[in-house]
Each structure stands twice: as C-alpha cells, then as structure tokens.
Image (tube, rainbow, N blue to C red; front, side, top):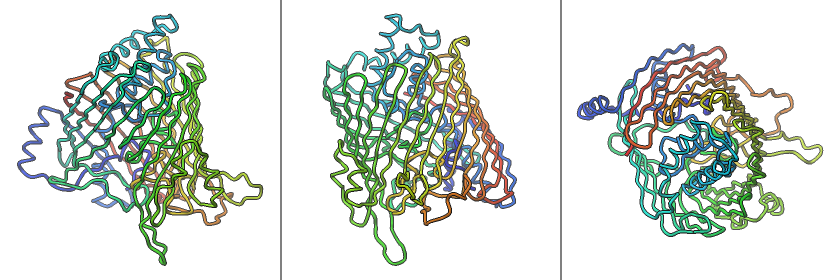
Length: 558
C-alpha cells in the first residue's frame, strides 16, 4: 500500500535487515532506559498481501519518531524537536513578537534573538500584555537563546540519543548539531560569521518516492545504518546582505505545516543563498542550487540530465498584523546542462528570460499573505502558479495550487488552547512539466506540498499548552488523492471534462493525538496515537485498509 504523501504516517519505513543477537540485547537494555512502544494493527483489504500488511505496521510505528511537533516548518539550528518554531508561531499569533518575516524559513538563531528582543520591547512599552503561558514561553526562549541575546561568540553543541522502535525491532539513533559564531555586527546584533553542521544516524528506510531520480543521497552501512549530514553551511553576514553557502532547507510560504511552493518535503538543497533586509519591513531572498540528476529515456534518446533551480522572493511586513510575500523560481535541466548564469542573477525576471530565449524551462510564481485581525487569530493563504493560460483561445489547463488556513488561541482560555485548520489543493498537472527533466522534484520527492499533484487535504487540530514544556494535541486529516502523478504530462486530454481529483479517488481519514514533554535539556517524552483508514486503497475501487497505533518514546537531550 502507498500511503498518501501528505500523511503524517509514512515518512519513515522500517529496514528489513534483521538485528544480531548482540544488538537485540543492547536494544532491550536501551528500551528499559529510554522508552517502549505498544502497537496494535488491523487491516482489511481485498488486495492486501501478507508482506504488505507488515509494511503498514512498519510505517505506522516508525512515523512516531518524527512527530515530535505539531508544526512542520524547518527547525531552527540546534533545535531537533521543533519546539522553538512552534513557540515563535504561537507568540506571533498572540501579538507578542510582532512580525518577523516568518514566511521565509528556516530562521537563524540571530533572527530568533531579534524576535525575542522585539517582544520584550512591545511588552515593556505596553503594546501587548502577555498571558501567563506566553510569558513563560518567552522566558524559555530567552534561556535557550541567552548567548545570542548577549551576542557572545563561541561554540554550541547539542546531542540527542534516541531509541526508535517497531514491533519487529528496536534501533538506537541519534542527532547531533554544532553551531559556531565569530565577530559582531553591532548595527544588527548578529554575528559576522556563523557555521552550522547537523548530523543524523539511523537505520530506517526513506519514504516512497513521488518521482524518479538517478541520484543517491545515502548509502547503507553496518546494521543498515546511514549517516546523513542533513545541514551544513557557512554564513557570512554584513550590515545589509547575508551570504550562505552550503546545505540547508528552504521553506517559502505562510503555512506552519507544509507549503504548496518550496517546502522541506524534499531533501535540503546544496545552494548559494543571499538575504538582504531593506529596512525593517522588506526582506529579499535569492538562491541557486543544483538538484539531483535524472535519466531521460524516450526509447530513441537516452541521457543523464543535470538539473538546477534558482529562485528569488520578497517579503513585506506591512505592519505587525499583515505580511505578504511574492516569489518566482525556475527549474531547468538537460543533457550536459550547466548552470545558467542568467537565472543565478537575483534581480532578473525569470519568465521574461525564458520567454525571450524561447526556452521551455519550468518557471513558477507564488503569492502568500497572512493577517492577524486581532491578537490570538491568524488567517493565511497561498497561491502557486505552475502554468496559467493568459492567451485567449489557449487549449491548455491551468496548473495551480492553493492553500487557506486559520489559527485561533482564545483569550478567555488564557491562550493555552489553540484551534487550527487548513485546506490545501494541488491541481492535476501542477508540479509536472512537458520536459521530464524539469519536473518539480528533488531526489524523487516533490519540492512542494507532500500530497503532490491531483490531491487535496483538509486538517483540523486542537492543541493545549499544559505547561511551558508540556503540550497535548488532537487532530483529524481528510485527504483525497487522484490517479494523476507528478511524472504525468499533458498531451491534449479533455481537461474540462475531468473531475477533481481524477480517476479512482483514494480517500484517507486520519485521527490521532499527541502528548509531548520538551524541556530545554534532559529527559523528554512523547506519546502518539493514530487511527488511519483508506477507502479505494491504491486506487482500487472497494479496497479498504485501516490501522491503529499507540506509541511511547523517551530520550535524553544533552
């Protein structure tokens, strides 16, 4: 079975390599210290095979260990469990921080320190009166970013040993991060130089691909383990311009979960990135990156396509309640393709360049906006144009995607309780391209929203902040996935007569809850329950599948 790519289930699949007796003893000892997992799985389907049943159990249990946060935006450096991004999003919605260009992520540690200072200033000047829980969250952030607030140079390291468990086996894993800063820019209260490296080791397989790739990111080692330097970059800052060279995520959009434009659904980019702040309201970002290679083979011609992506974006903070963003990017590739310096130019207009050159590169546009009409309420939306027909009489479909969402923290409940909803839709032929080299993927994964093309999803969740480090969440997700795939091309079909989604629609319902305890250091714990039910599984009419999961995890953060 293929779980819908949007699902919180299915991001990691258990490896098949059996553990040795010595490792089993180690796993049992670690489990007694670090945590344990309880599971129950049930499946009914006309098309299911015994081996596929085990695959569902693997997916359900292994997914527990990446669901440590309610949000999905990239984490701030040295923050492995995502609580910093989640806390900042809450404080911004409640009016404490004001705007801080959160639509362009990941934020640097200096960016977070600046948001904390602004929040303190707003409180001191009486602009906002924080709730008790928001005041505690702000104090927790101040402790985490104490060095950045004092602008102290030096090295910081974090190490997180874990135990990841399924019914079939338990396997230790770990994450490590190093952050080093040097020099000071007094005008911006930021370091002149920052170096960051982040590593993860585990022996779980990667999720299923959305498309094809000729590249390989990870090689299995002893015990089926992989070592992944997920992020590693050098950033040099100046008064008005920052330069980043290395590997990092990109996340452009207003959603706190996954955007429909450039998200962190695919592996991080090896890139060169420029960021400029033009006053307090305007922020400009541009990057150029090399993507994975893909094979082109139409039966007559075969070659290895080299692929690249360039993009630029403007964020405008109209005031502390309104933020808008506009972006354009271009993905291109081909036989013996090299870097196009015209696209590496951050102040050009990509569509005009490719139009004048009569090229068929994949140019896309994105618009996003968020408004806080009152403290505690945030409304946001995104619109991505992959292909839109503006010539009268054009007989081609609009390839677009859009997203709407809302968050509300009621004041009469002390801002402890939050209600979140979001709807995302990716039309058929969005993310695709007539030239196979230019499909919107990186190492086989959609660069945009995880649901990929010909799908939509709606999610509702409620969170409750019990203490500054303890949170509970319940959520429900409904997804429809058509038979369109990111590798499909438009060849003149009668698109006006096609429904959305197309073909036999797989309908997935996901209901679950999460409890997490995430202090600054030391022991942490999480509990997750998920029920998953799919109608027309694998797009086979009448086929159904369902599964239950209960998992508990504990770890120690150094």
